Image (cartoon, rainbow, N blue to C red; front, side):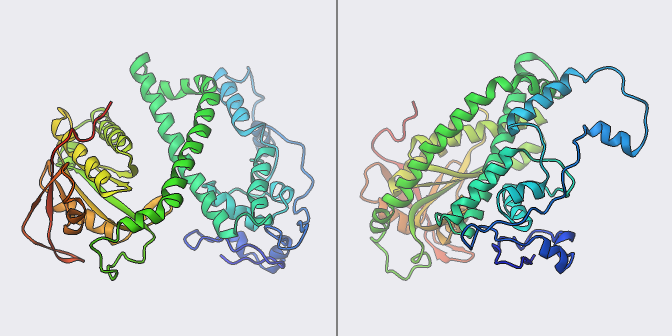
Length: 422
C-alpha cells in the first residue's frame, strides 16, 4: 500500500495487509485524503473530509428506511439494554463519529489513521459507519502527538501501538474465558448462559481490573527497564568468559539464559481428553510454569501448546528454574513429565519475543533430552561448573542440524535446596 497524500505522509503501511479498494481509487481520492499525517509542518491539519453528519438513527430505524417492515412492538430486552450500557461505559459514550470525522479531529489523514487502527487490530470500516466516540479521537491524538512532539519516531509509534493492540487483545480474551469458566463451575450454568450473564456482571469488575492493569504495567515496565537497560551491560560482561568473540550470537545485544520445557506425549494425551479435561491440563501446565519462572526471577516469554519458552539473567538462575520445572512435572500426579533444556548465550529481543542462535540451540537440546531431565550445552556447563548447587554429567556428542557436533551435558541438582516455592 502506498501513501498517496500530496503532503508527506507517514509510511505506516504494513506489507502483509490486504490493499483496500479505496487506496487504489485514484489521485482524486488521494487528494481528498491530503494532509500531514503526524504534522511534518508546524500546525499542519487536514481539511475535514466528511459531509455534514445526518441525524443519527438507531440501526433498527436505518433498516426500516431501507425496507419497510411492521412497526416494532414491545421494548428493548433487558439483555440488550445491559449490552448497550456496557458498551457506552467501555467506549466512553455512544458511537457518534465516522472514521473521517475522527481522523480530521486528530489532524490526521484517513490513510494514516487506518494504519494506526490496523496496528491496534481494529477491523476496516466504511465511510458511513458510525463506529467511533470522542475517546477514539482522543486516543488517536495521543499517539500522533508523541510523534509530532519528537518523542517517538513514526516507526516506533506503530510498533508500540501494535504491541498494545496485540497484548490487550490476548489479555481480554483470557480474562473473559476465565470469568466464563468460573461462572460455569460456581453457578452450575451452561457456557452459553454464562456468556450472556457476563454482560450484566462485568460492570462491577471494570474499575478494579483497569486499576490492576495500570498497576501491573508500571511494575512490569520498571522491571523491564532494569533488565533491558540498567543491567544489560553487566550481563554482556559476565557472558565473556569462555567465548572467543566470533560466535554466531556475538553481535546480539543481550546475554540471557534461554530455556524450553516441553511436555512429553502431550499430543497423544490431548486426543484422549474431552474439552474440559484438556483445558484443565493446559491451565495447570501454564500456571505451574509461570509460578516457577517468576519465583526464580526469570520471565516467561511465551507458551505454545505443550511448550514454554523462558529466560533468566544469569546461568545459575536459568539452571535453578530449569531443574525446578523438571522436578515439578515429574512429581505432578496429573501432568506428564517434561523435557527441559537451557543455554546461556546472547539474544535479540523484539516484539515481545526473543531470537538468535541461542534460542535455536536450546530448542534443539530440548528435543534431545530424556523425559524428566535437563540438558545444557558445553559452554553453559562451563559457566556453571564451579557452582556447588549443580552437578554436570557429560553425554555423548550429538550431530545437531544447523549446529554440527555439540556436546550435551545433563544438569542435576547439587548441594542446597534448589528453587523453593512459597
